[in-house]
Image (cartoon, rainbow, N blue to C red; front, top):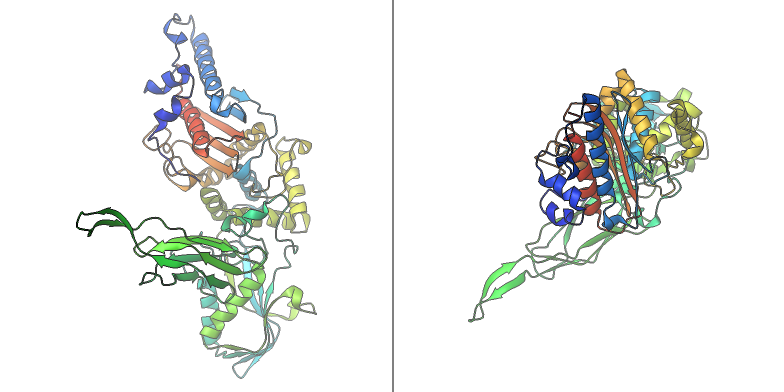
Length: 535
């Protein structure tokens, strides 16, 4: 999400029509139009309400006719959840790329079909015997699709290996000092696909396009922090979290002098500044090699990049092995996945040594929506597929989603869904579909509160924390955002000045202007709505 505030809005709004500028300039935002100044008072309350709604609709049309978006498409659907009346509709039945707005569907489906109390269990098992401080057999981590094991998103102050540390400590308390076997990661709860269709290959090295696996650890990513060295010309310092040999770092970056801003006539430096950093941290596609290039000033700020990793299952097994070895537990075998074994794991004979139970789906959905976490969305999408269709694949996930949407009144043949996060550029939904789901969740009294509280709050938290602060929209609008190149979407709930609850969806596609302009247009619409009164 690109952050911005109201600062500088006027330079943006001058591109809007004269009517829209007048709307913003009138701080009350209520029923403003040049026409309204000359119209006599309506003869009845019903007629007055009709006139104010018509004024609103004309204002919204003016906003969406902004010439900055003359080459783009806007789809809009705004409906009262109290009366069922549509406030405004624009291309609302046409197909749009939703980006992360698709997580609204994923959240609704997971809460409805898995239930808000559903939890994942990840087990540590062995098929061997324990004798003389030795496990004579493999240690197996059996995944069930949990996205929260070691997740950065749960608590940024939490060590990703916290669960593995606890498991290792429990083995030490049993007196275990040796494992005569392998560390095996079992991800067979899902199919062996790691990506859905439609993701851009250039996104794959980065945290938001991580691979999906039934055994996922630390959100299938690493954090790389780059710091300047203590001497000019020296190689930069770096830190990888979690610290692991699973990734290889090629450090080609150096530390440079600070920039000279002004020099006195005597030739002495009077003012220096850190200058700009040119550090780039990237992972080579298809490998776990991380390359650091560029320069950082000696007093420059640290640079942090989150990168995805290849083969999440092997990643989890490798890091757990490293934790065990750090506790003095020797491993005779290898780190591997269950696919590497030439035999089936006899789970009926296995002994559970430890387990990790995730937070409930209600918390997972909240974390997914607030931070727009793609891994959480994909894991939920595939979990519903496994639980409802018997196969944890994206194909079955799409089938399950289409069936769920059909039950709430959306024709399956009018949508295309290939993932749970909205990162796929093959996803297609309409704004009216989004409002249909929002309306359906509003009607599900047992689920609505959990669903509503999962959405980012305008000007307060999540992906909306820095938008429309110090306005009536702050704390009022609850909505999910979405962003891809050329795509900006926002859908959710708000209340008008009359305290009337609305569901809305605003999706822009194919624009070539800066995303900040799309944000400003959406914010202008939301300000008009939260300040609207029928009276």
